[in-house]
Amino acid sequence: MKWRIFLFSGLLFFTGTVFAAESLPDPSALLQTVQAEENTVLEWLQLQMGALLAALIKSALAIVICVLLLYLRRKHRKSVRLADILLQPLLLFVTLALCFHFIHPVIQSLPGQSAAAVEMKLFYAGATLIITWGVLGIITLLNRQVHRFAERNGSTLDDLTLDLAGNILTGTIIFLALLFIGQNIFQLNISALLAGAGVIGLAVALASRDTLSNFFGTIVIAGDSPFRIGDLIKTGAVEGIVEHVGARSSRIRSRDESLYTIPNSLLAADAVCLISRKGLIKYSPELGLIYQTTPEQMETAIRLLHEIADDFHGPDQPECRPHIYFETFAPYSLNIHLIVWLKAENFTAAEALRDELNRTILQKFNAAGLEFAYPTQTLFPGIDLEKT
Image (tube, rainbow, N blue to C red; front, side, top):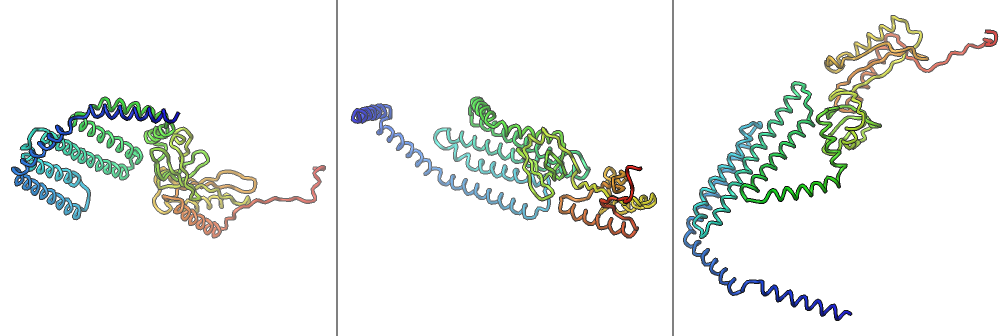
């Protein structure tokens, strides 16, 4: 059985070799063609060697000058402005045009027009990429300015919304630039490529439904803005400060410094409780005074709390002023409810402010003779419940 397999394999190899030998061109003719092309190139080099060296030296000099100008500008630049953004693409475009101007006459002297055509395509492709780079720099500068405008004027524009819009616009411009280069410069069949990409994209979409749902969850979060980076939120069993919102998930830092990573699809679908906005962390303790507290002492307690909490470590925003009120008659205490927004970016700073606030309350209440309540029971011995 084995010798039959070896014999059949040998026949297939011999047949394939014969057909391959018949389909290949004559080696002698191929060698003559290569030698003719080599002689043509050598003759061209002998005639154009001086012009080629001069063009290369001029091009190298233009590149060195461009690099030096960019280095000097970056070294002495103090701020990023529109002129700085456009200077680099402009210098590169001028350098590319000079190199093309120096080398193109030499390339045109080559036998045939294929080299000159390729050079023209490369020049147009490079110019398109440089222009795209300049446009992307302008978009980055505008995005930065909009960020500053939103922070300075308290705009409702969220960092996530701006970043997502900037990324989508950047990706669109890059895609259009590559599409223009491929179709108009190199005459690629973009329709076939897009059709193939559509089929591949459908397969990828079916295989990564969770990733797509998280991405659309990010778009919902950016558009609806239920919270911002730096806000204190509670969703499900997780309560903490939003540190990062990515394309797939968000990271939330809890009070015990645990870092939770939650898929954006869950954040977009679940209920989110916004406890406080960026830079403010809500603190709402209940203070219980004993039942022997008089109405005058209760008024003193509320007044002292206002003196402590109002404009605590900085002026309060109009919508975030402290709320202090006599809440309820509890089983063993008269409860005062305090709501104050601590001016802190993280839990560490908030804990320090909370500690200072509690110490100040304890000191002033003790000085005013106000007593805090604790769980107590009152026993009345000697009473016959049946007679009563």
